[in-house]
Image (tube, rainbow, N blue to C red; front, side):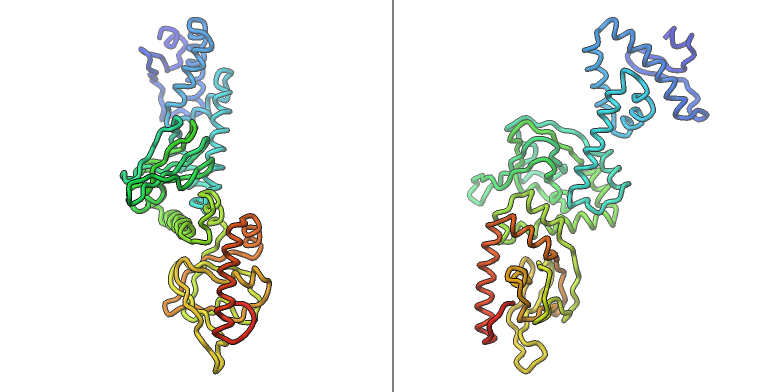
Amino acid sequence: DVTAVTANWGVMVDRGRIRDTLPLDSMTIADQAARYEEMLSYTIDMMDDSAGRHFLRRAIQGAHDGLPWQEREVLSRHLLQRTSWGADLSQDFESTAGDYRYLLRAMPLFANADDADIEALVAALRTRRVKAGRAFARQGQSGDRFFLVRFGEVEVWQRDERGEERLIAELHRGDYCGEHALLHSAPYPATYRAAVDSELLVLAQEDFNRLVKSRFQLGAQVQQAAEVVSLLNQMPILSGLTHTQIRRLAHQFQRREVQPDEVLITQGVRSDTFYVIAQGTLVVIGERGSPQEKILARLSAGEFCGEIGLLLDQPPIATVVGGEEGATVLSLSRHDFDVFVRGNLGVSRRLEQVSSRRVIDTRRKLGLSGVV
């Protein structure tokens, strides 16, 4: 304290706490940082002499990690990076912040979030380390946290109607859970347990509500992304895919609104798109506009069309239009469809089986040969 007063820093250490008498309203943040830098550098030199460098580094690291993210960001930018004792911490912080941004950007939930949204989310994330074998969220519990896997592996266990748990998925770096519970104010649908020592990034419910649900545009995007993942998870043809594969596939789909009687696929015209119905209905019509016009099928949420033309590379022999109330569909381009099918043999086989049944049924109803 005597040194601080005589040096005229306006900042001092008093019984383990920092106090300042700086005229903050009239000082720039750079000037404030310079005063703190002088005082902290002097204090750290004294601690280094008495406690040793190893203890000192751990103490500084612990104090730094205990600060809210915004304060760490200010500290790193305006003070740590200019000091010999804080440069490593500053570099670690910038590296960590960059990794957080990368993980959030890679998530389908936040794929369309702007830079300001991403920075707000980064600032709200908290780190949680979970030992192997420990559950951090249990099926049936009120959902009050969103979890993003940064390092490690998480097992997803779900209890059936007989009370028996079964492993339904494994989550790895970049995977996440808890969004459904927070979006719908519902319990966790499964138990999440660390398979190995893992590091999670956690977003509390109040922060999720503030940053996601309360922001109409971002909230709507997150809601839609979660609905796509949920829909794909329920499709039998995709049953063999992992949690990660489903979410990566969801990110590739484009949403499209189809009006009543709007043509989506035209008989005889090459189609380069695979469609999954998210809401509403589509109607499959043979020989549309002719005396032989015939409704072949009605497709509802979770069903799909367009796959036969893509698999066999032939034009369709039926037309697909929006139902009485229209439909919301998810579209996948020919290129993305081909890459996806080539990389997933099980899905390819199930698609071919469904397609074969549809071809036979269509031929029987129309008395024609060809494909839908």
